Image (cartoon, rainbow, N blue to C red; front, side):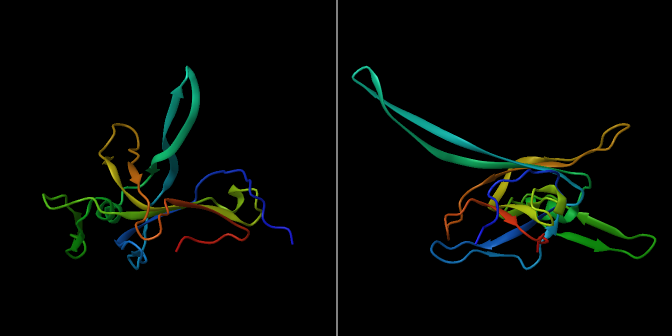
Length: 189
């Protein structure tokens, strides 16, 4: 029985969601919020890692080398600012008030706001991989902001919100990330 190819092209990103991590007990099972938050207008999700390499020298020669993963990071750009995304990334809640024509939605950063852990998942469109009708998902299971999100305004142009995260392995499983090839495209839950 032939399996799925283990190599594919990667073209574009069609969806990205973040989900608050609610618990991650060592030796237990990680749990996430019941609802994921869409990162609206996702433009890119770039993932990279840091490696440490140590060498052992003796007798005037290289005897051995050892490398290990020192960290995994990701950066996302999205076309639309989302108060719900800010609430997951930095803490706090979005408050809606008023009636038409005076409705308001407010997210605020306070002295008690604190970045929390979350998972981030991005996916290619069905034509974005070599799997005809399939897709590719990348999931970082436990992330936290590593830099304050880029927000604000820009004269005579669109402002593209950006955020950067650092990933750590889940305490429950030791997992950093998954890359999943699906023969048939699957939506991010």
